[in-house]
Image 1 (tube, rainbow, N blue to C red):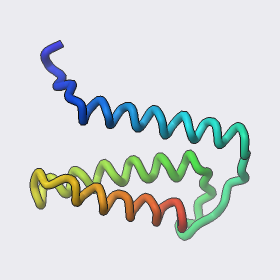
Image 2 (cartoon, helix red, strand yellow):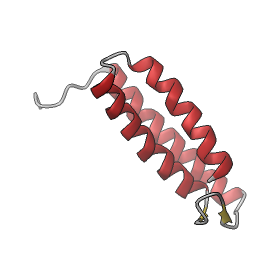
Image 3 (spheres, rainbow, N blue to C red):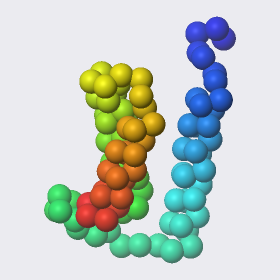
Image 4 (cartoon, rainbow, N blue to C red):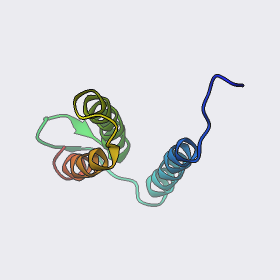
Length: 90
């Protein structure tokens, strides 16, 4: 498989996604929640907000890469602020 560059950052990314999904599964089993309405007026659960966060973070990183370049650590800070905002207000 020479087409995929499996580097440590790539592996770490997928490991983090698996850990997050595992934590959210355990939270859903131990602490079931009722959907809530945020500023978008959509009923969302933790999993919905996680999906919105991951999707938005992907777009933030792609836009950052296109506009700024390869200085991605600063994009991570923007993504973390975005994630906090989504989980707080959406």
